[in-house]
Length: 199
Image 1 (cartoon, rainbow, N blue to C red):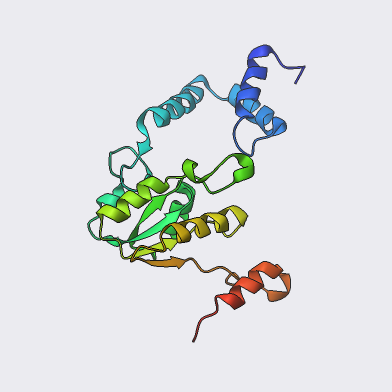
Image 2: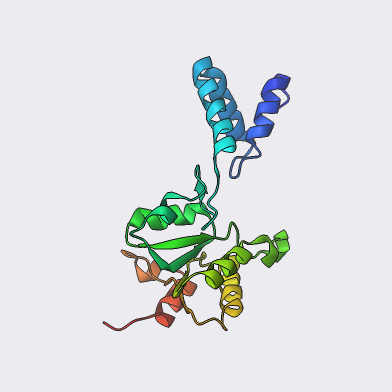
């Protein structure tokens, strides 16, 4: 980075703070920005500022939205008695893409990771309890990621809500469609056997 002028170094440094962007990728992005027209660069900068200014959390499910209540929570055709709990807005988007779920969501904005300093108090569990206590929730689908942090979060939620008269379910994990068993990891095979169902 020594070869770059100070403003470029600063840009590379800022771009390098983005998740998944290393120094080389940051340098490529900075060079792309330098080659872009001033108009394109202004549009990029304005869209970043606009996102920060306009996007907020839905006051019901904590999804990203421009309004007080997101489009999913406003949808009267959705089943408000079923809440799917996800870690982040990307997980919600992935479930929405499949088009099969017609309930609502609750976004935790993280998962338990004590070594990274993320405990229960850092997740949006208080808001979840408030929704359960004030609503007519019949089922909670725990759709946290099937990894150590997601499983720990699912266990925490299960323990937290075991006294409530609500059906708790967990998304199925196991062998993906089109997968070949000889290439699937042991944990996925184990989970697929554990969560097998009748046919």
